[in-house]
Length: 384
Image 1 (cartoon, rainbow, N blue to C red):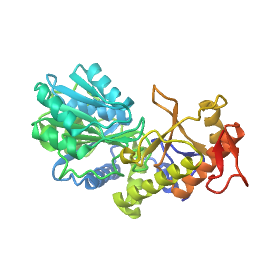
Image 2 (image 1 turned 90 degrees about the vertical axis):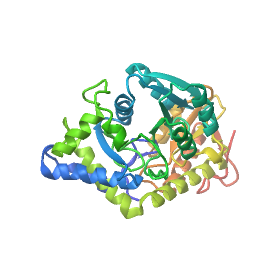
Image 3 (image 1 turned 60 degrees about the horizontal axis):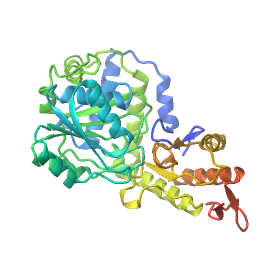
Image 4 (image 1 turned 90 degrees about the horizontal axis):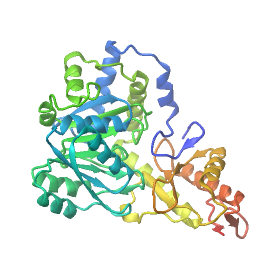
């Protein structure tokens, strides 16, 4: 796979293909018919991934994924609604913060960062508080890589007659979500994640009836998804200046997504990346934070070496000099670092990253070589 250096082993921005980067070399008029057709094509392709064409609208929005999450809460939750926010990491906490800032009533249910929320938890909470109108869930919590049981939780929410809002920022396009089987009012994702576009555009899959009923809910002019969708239907245009180059890059990335084999192929490549990473790091004695059964193949959190000579900033800069950018840990209780499995990279690239990590820890005198020295998969290096 031909990529630019350094390779970004992060959960977004991430490494993109040459074709995706090349697509940004063209300037587009934001009201031009060709660009409007590009936007329409992107939305159509995104809905197809979700099997949501009949049930949902795809509403694109300028900005990062968090912009789109705030827009979804602000537009689809009435001002007298109440949100149950399910938390097992930093992005669940951010979702609760959004509710607080927007003045939406909310309650939280927080589990440990290595414990998924269960459908039984949600059932109990909804029975206990009938004022809850919406449940908000992070599908794949990027602070650890934990995968929450979306289908089971969605069914419980539906059974209680409540509405579900899903932050699928780190899962959409790689993990299967079928709108025909998983009921939800909103699912939110972004251009710079598993679709391997570049950052700068979020999008919300909004259930058609829920969006139609949302006029006047939003706290913001710029983030009003009802107005954004209504204007696009009427004119084919974005209300305000769109991220034209980002849209063009995403269109090209979606073409490559289809060529690769769509979601099954993207999921398999990421799963292979994740396994290569886990195997290589285990050979170095570096332990992953999550057990395999709740580890999504998106990003892996590793316990930092227990050695006074290990400092993340030094480690990060040394690995970066070898061509790979990692991610700091986001946990508060234990020291960790994170390695992404997504982006335009394959298992061979992940093995090269493990070799760079092993060599770096050797240089820092945190690893020592055993026997004949580092092998191709660095399996003969051991923690001091």
